[in-house]
Structure formats: C-alpha cells, structure tokens
Amino acid sequence: MLSLRLARGAHPLVLLRRLLVAAAAAGVGFLLLCTLGYAVAHPKSTGQSLVRLVWCAVPLAAVVQFAVAVARTDPATRPRDGLDAAGLGPVRLSVLAAASTAISCTLGSGFALLLYKVLRGDVGGPLSGSARRLLDGQVHLPWGATLTLLGLLPALAAGACVLALHPRREAAAMTQQAAAEPLEGAEEAESAETPSDVPPAPPPVVPTPKPAYAGLPWGIAIIAVGLALEAYVGHGPAPDPNRLISLPGRTDGASPGVLGGWLLASLGLVLAGPGLTHWCGVLLAAGRPGAVRLLAGRILQDAATRIGRPLGVLCAVASGALAAAELYGAAWDSSGPRPFGPLTGLGAALVMACVTATAITAALDSRQNRTGTTAALQRLGIPASMLRGAAILRTGVLLAVLTPLTWAIAELVTLPMSR
Image (cartoon, rainbow, N blue to C red; front, side, top):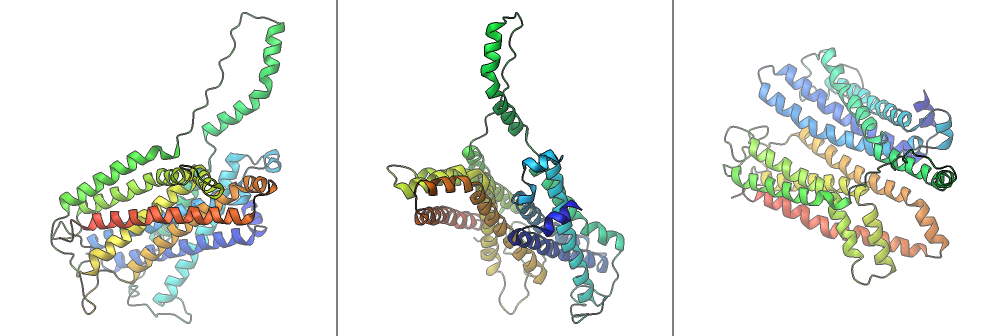
C-alpha cells in the first residue's frame, strides 16, 4: 500500500521510468510466452525450444538491470530523517523499492499476457487472431507454466533490488566512525582525569573502498582470453541460414566455444568499464588543464564506478550486435531464408533499449548526486555554460574512447570466423 501511495505522488519523470520498466517487462513476458507456445506446439523440437528459452535469458537480464537502475534512482527509496524516525530505515526502504519494482514488472507481464491472447485469437479485440499462425494459436497453453514464466521476472527484479539496495557493511562502519569522531575528544579528556588499567578499545576498522580502476586489468585479461578462445575454435563453415542459431566452428548447430568466447569478451568489457571511465577522467585532467577540462576530468573520476559498469554493459551489447550483423550479414541474401525472425529482432531491440536506458539512468543518477557540488560551484560564480561545456567534453571523450574499442572488439571477435 505504501508503494502505491508513493507511486501516486511521484514526480512525472519517476513515473515515466517505472512505465518504461513495465514496457520492458511486457516485452520479456511476450518473448517468454512465445517460447512456451512454440514448446507446446512442437513437443519433439526440444533443442530449438531450449535455444529459444536461453535466448530469452538475455533480455531478462537486461530488464532486471534496468529495473535495478530505476529503483536506485527513485527518490522515494532514498534514506531520509523523517522515514527513519517512522521506522523505515535503509533495509525497509530496499524492500519498498523491491515491492515497487515487482508491481511495475507484474503490470507489464499482465499486459504481455493480454496482448498475447489477443494476437492468438483467444480474446476478442481489434487485433484478435492477427498472429495466430506465428504464435501457434492452435494449441492451448498450460496455465501453470504460463503463470510461472510470467512471475519469473518480477521475482528476479525484486530480489535484485533487495540485494543491490541493501546497506553495505562498509557504509555502516563509516557511519559509525563518523558518529564516534565527535566523542573522541571527550573520551580522551575523561580517560586523562580518571586513569584506568583497562586498555582502550581498538578503533573500528573501516575497509577502504576499491578504486574504480581495480577491475581494468581483470577486464583486459578476460577480453584477451575470450578472443583467444574465439581464435582457437572459430574456424569452420559459414553460418547456416536454415538453422535457428548457427555459428561457425561446428557443423550441426551452435558452438559452445564460440558462445563462450563471446561471453568472456562481453564480461571483460563490463569489468573494464569503470576503469576505462576513470582513466578517461585522468586523461582529461592530465597536464595543465583549464577549468573546463579539470572539472570534466574530476567528475569522470568521481563517477567512474557509478556510470562505468552500465557503459561497459552497453559496449558489450553493442559489440555483440556489430559482430552478429557482420557475421550473419553475408550468410544469406535478400531472397533466401533468414536466421533471425521477428521475435529475435524484438529481443535484440529490447536488450539494446534496456542497456541504453540503464546507462542514461546511471548518468542522471550521477548528476543528481552532484546537486550539492553543482550548487556550491554556482555560488562561487562559475557560469552554467562552463558546466555544460564540461558535460559535453565528458560525453565526447567517452564516445571517442569507447566507440573505437567496441568496434575493434567486434572485429576481433568475427575475424577468426569470417576467414
């Protein structure tokens, strides 16, 4: 009930983000229902049904990441003194964010079920039965399996929100240390007046946070391993357009080595994202920078952890899309069969839209966290044009570094398979 009340009084931009989460959830629910319909209509095609279900896992992960990013930027789930006094601390706020996310995903899944039923012809409407043949409308879906698949996304998104927004022990330790600092002087004075044989308690150990560039060497190493695996197993015939998913390296279907190389290269890009963002900021602030360049570099270094990981995911997805387009682009002509159908295109578009929206949401969250710093700079007399110039410079440097890197990895991935 509290989630619904907070949703009613939320800002229109927050409502738009939740609506986008519901739309993305509807897309994933539609893909899952199409996979279930194909499995029920073709009980002997177990392999293709399994491939379709595995392909649905990629959009599912992208939507879960987007839902967590939206929940992280929701102002209603930020710790505040009034809510803390009312018993809504950080733990309960994370549960509240999970409930709001589950409601949005459930609404999207319900809309997907309604649209799927209408297109199959099970429910009357203006589009009733328009895709009956494509969606295997001649068979009836089991309600148990349907509700299980549709409830998968809300459960995963809610669980991911609880894990991502749960207060960390490091933050709690830092808070305890900050609260104990004003009492140190009084304790020292009291101990000086009343000496005691009891040894003083050791100070609390606060773990130092890892730097943003800590994952860069691991990312580079994993990318190298993925590319080496691609080069080792990627030799084989061209992709077969008549199969659902056919990759070089194996004549009877998808090669596990090729898929593993792609996944390793993508994981390396994700891990290297914060480090690349950090060193972009270092590059901007190197030498004798001016005010705009120094401001842009320091902001990139400060926000590297927050925006670097979504940018790494975006680069990984874009690299995979470029590699697939180059690999499959020459595998069939315009008049021949196509390995990618409309549902595959829907899943790819959903993944790209979700990772792009996640990166934009992370950038907006970083901007919101710098509100106090921006206000202080404006009080010092820094014009707004300088802040806009720093933002444009940051965006340009990130594009100049990440775009060629994404293209190069896509080319290196497809190079052994296109020979």
